[in-house]
Length: 257
Image 1 (cartoon, rainbow, N blue to C red):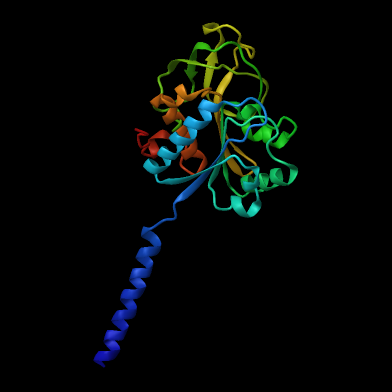
Image 2: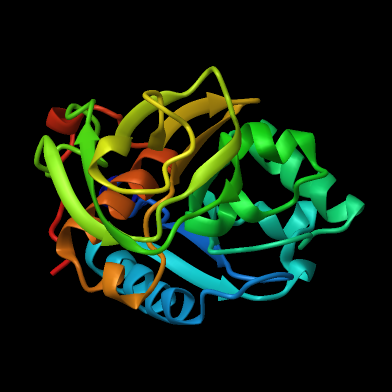
């Protein structure tokens, strides 16, 4: 009888241990940073961005892989990632098969972050334009401008001042999507060379074809990645697309420093 009781106790402890292990060690999410260029290359922004996003991952409990290879875009390989970050990509970077794999990734609930010249990527791929939210047209000289934070409730903007002055390369867009949740606009009266008028968004988020997307036009060079405000802006976008609530008060945004 005693032996049976000990055996049952052992099985009970084993079951409890299994349950505790299953619930106490959630699988770490992973993102893929993709920085292939087939046009102008923002070298300093790409190199600094890979380093800083890697640091964000360490401090915010998500893993980070980086690649310049479009061969990473297969259905099977993308299954391991919660999101793909297009870090200053330019030009035609994916073939048709790779495009289809990425479309399936988003339709299965994957996330997308587009940074700066991601808007200067894949002009002939209409689906991608919709995911990113806009296509680049041109830009004036780099200069300081006034950015208006029109939504401070999102985790990508809650830390920003309502009026944010910064020096950057300021994009004009040839096409802007209509179903975007705009976070930041630029005041074209604050600089020279604006081309989109009063409605000139510079950062946004949206749900798209089963997944989530976030884009910011900011981040031309490594100086942006030295700015804690910009770092937190990007971190909030990453957290949103990998499944966090968009509401700033519903998640503790860990410092990137």
